[in-house]
Length: 140
Image 1 (spheres, rainbow, N blue to C red):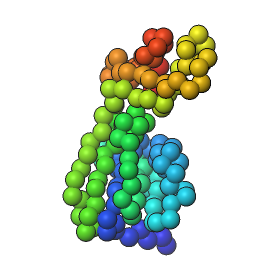
Image 2: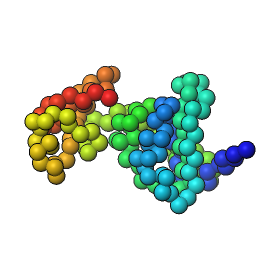
Image 3: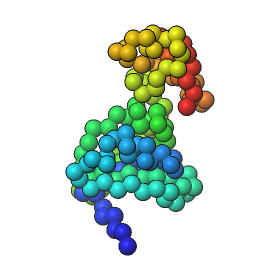
């Protein structure tokens, strides 16, 4: 039997769409963490049916834009003294940098490797982003 203890001070990333937890886990480099981390996959959820959860028993910096881009329905719970001190509801970010790569072979980012890949949100409902340089559309 596996026991997952409560977190004294850290972060719980909750309401992750089932199957995306491992992507976030890897993005955050949690496989190399020197502290307790729990990745819970396919947990029952009244709201989502199934969800993933990541519990991190440590304070770490999170890029809310990237996490919101991966899954805009995520809730971040900041834990102190085993209690939720703050809840942060994520959304699709207005802009993302170096998260998406432009697929247009004529885009300046295809030629100049050092240029930051910049996209801005053009349709929140459809999850559409547009390249700032060539106007290529990227769909989530």
